Image (cartoon, rainbow, N blue to C red; front, side, top):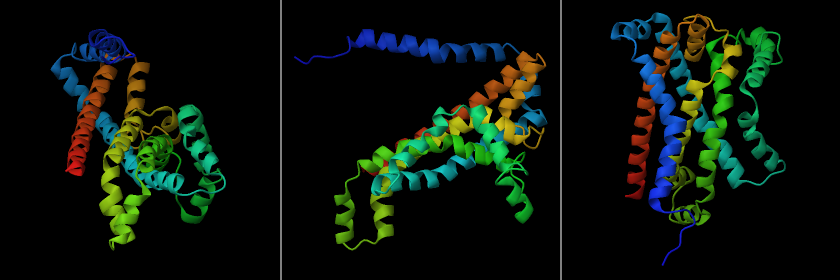
Length: 273
């Protein structure tokens, strides 16, 4: 007779569903009920507004670009941390988690000070290359790369640790080059983890506010992100419009995450086959 640490299936499932419903489903249901209390004409008026659409494309576009960038750099960081031993390795490993602990508003102020035209990096970039970072879309991209990097690294790192070196050595002994070993042996094992890391980074980037609101400058139709539009509507006491925008953001996020999950499952089945 097998013993279980947790109570029976029905009780465990009931507690799980109750907690999930109270913490996740109930707020989302309240948001949807508030939004669909508006007429379809009001919803379409809010959703088709040029300022909202520009902010939507900006938020999701730059968040996706930052997540893609972190797929490359996050994989590289995870590879270095797993495969090499060097002085200061533990410090580097700890620094990766810094965006988790650092308040996003503090990160936004620090990045803005660093990349402003009077900052340590922003000044030389402006003077030598004529490149402005703060209060531009490039600044938003850098801020989102900063806050989403740990999601990719911490997702890929455990998978890399579980890939035995013997697999690579066997492939090399059979005549495979380094690129072939990576592409045919290692990468298929990492694809599900990379997809998960991308999804987490995208979700965090889309909803990010504190680190972006300072460095973006919040210029309407140029550098204004969707969360800032929602805050602006709330400041104007247009709660219905803010709720409608939030629901639009939620729907687009759900569609993207669903597509990523479907791709991830397809990659897992293909790797298993």
